Structures are given as structure tokens and as C-alpha cells.
Image (cartoon, rainbow, N blue to C red; front, side, top):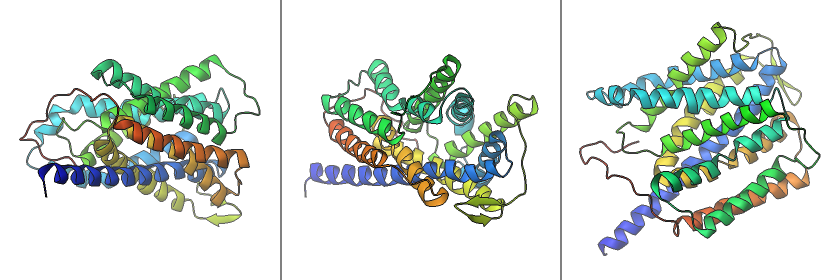
Length: 328
């Protein structure tokens, strides 16, 4: 078997693994809104739900994240600014901006603006690295964008608010930052360490926001209700921290490092589709036919973007240090 064949097989296996990680991440993230809904209806504030979710995930990942760099903690020191930017912008910032956006405008419109992040990633790679998107990538983006509009069911009409649009754009920047930093393999940080550090920084930032009164904080111990079924409050809290944060961020980083920020950001659009599915299963909110059709278009768009990746201009980046460990 030739070297080129082995290389091709290795790249194919890497891409397949990346797609699986991306789907797990999108599914986990998509569950967060539905789980949080039960807590919000029982008396929790959005800020408290996000803070507990983030802090619990940071606590769970702290030990494995540190063990991953044991003996070479200089990697953490060298990337302190990157981890801080990741936690403040990609984790805490994206969530805070989104929550503020929905106080001024409809949830669907805010989501649509935030999920233009893949387009921002494409533009960033083009301007920063000269990675011009192929026609297939552009076509796939258009198809996925159309499907996203249908999934969010925005045809009933929506009012735009200037503050709301600005906050939603802030959430979009946070989401785009998430994909770009996730895909960086040159910093030497294992994926689980980046996730743990970012979540810890985000938890501190959210805690400070609550302490100074920027973010309302209040919780409750009443049972949460999902489609008529009652569960103790700590069940969705644990699921939010362990599944929709710890698992979601670790697998999201693993996906981006295998797929690149461009493709990973488009596969992540599946989060919106999964959010609709979980709202149907756990909240009894049955998706309309137009939403199901939109989900099909999102899938088609992601497939076209995947095909377009083979025709896109390569990203010009420095070769990683051969002494650096293989990222998780």
C-alpha cells in the first residue's frame, strides 16, 4: 500500500471522527435550551442557569484538564491570554450577548443573527489566511442559511430592535471566535485543557457580572416540569453542566481540530435542528412542516459545504512545532 493511500485513509478517518464529534457537540448544545426552559419556568433566572452550567462543567473538567498538561504547565502560562479570550468571548460573551438580545427581540431572529457565525468564519479565513471559499462552499452556506430561516420559522414576521441586533451580532462574534480558537492546533493546548480553562474563566466572568448586578441571579428548588413530567431541580442542573457544557465543549474542540473552523462551524448548525427536536420530545412543542423542511435543507447545506472543502483554497498557516504534543 502506497504512502499516499495511507495518508488518504488517515485523513478520511480523521474527518469521519471530526464529523461524529461535531454531531455529538451539536446535539449536546441543542439540549441546553430545553433543559434550561424547565429551570426558568420554575423560578431560575437565565444568568443563574448559565452560571451553574458553566461552573459545574469547569469543576468536572478541571482535574483532567490539568492532568493533560502535567509536567508542562508552561503551555498554560504561554496561552493564558488565549484561554482568557476564549472564556470571556466564546463562552461567557456569546451567552450573555444572546440573553440580552432576546430581551429586545424575538428568540428566532436573535438565533438567526447569531448563527451567521459560519459566514463570519469563512470571511475571517479568507481575509486573514487567504483561504478563499469555493463556489460549493458558498452554495452550501446559502442552502444552510435558507434552511435555518425555515427551522426558526421566521415567516410569521418579526420586529427588529437596534439594541437587539447589536447584542445578537455580539453573540455571533462570540460564536465565530469559538470555532476559530477551537481549530487552532498550534498552541499546544490539549482540547480538554482549553475547554476546562475557558469554562473556568467564563464562570468567573459570569459570577462577577452577577455580583456587580449586570446579570440578574436567582435560583429555586422547585421541581422542573417537562411535557407534564416532573423531575427534581438538580436533574436538569447536572445535565446542563455535564452534557450541554462539559461534553459539548470538549467534543466541539475535538471536531474543529479535525475538520477546521469552516466546516465545523457549518456542522454546528445542526444545534438549531436538535434544539427543535428536543423541544418536541421534552416540551411537547411539535415542529411544523416548514421546520422539518428547513432541517432537511440544513443537512443538505452542510453536505455541500463538506464537498466544497476539497475545492477551497488552502489555509496558509505555520507548521506546528514538531515537539508539541498531539492535541486531544
